Image 1: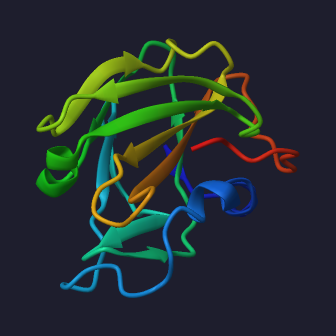
Image 2: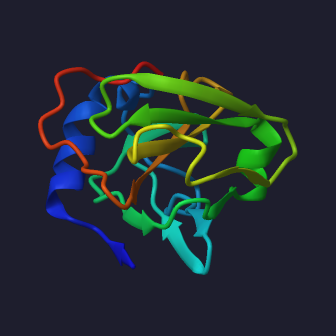
Length: 167
């Protein structure tokens, strides 16, 4: 079951402020709309919109409600990025359920469109966030950020973060 509770959106909106400050304002790309990242968790598949994206050398922040995905233990997770993001290189950052502590980061090789080396039980807390982060390119320091929360049975997503994640 996939939900997008208001609390998760409020949490990420406040907690990702430092990450989102990586690029200046302006249009996101020549085509207008920023690309989505596809997240597959077992039989569930959803498109994740960026909270930030930089196209044509100019960054743009977006007010979106990041999704929260309810998962069973040991559910395989795959993250798929568009070809242009893959060409730049990207990573997956892992945060706790309150976005207070960065638990880890996995660099994904340039040219790789799908990372499927994680399952829902690989992260110790039952509530956590995965954030797809595009590598810097052109004049942007941080070009793209796509957060998605995961909740295993017994977990609870925090609603009042006290720190912002490091980019």
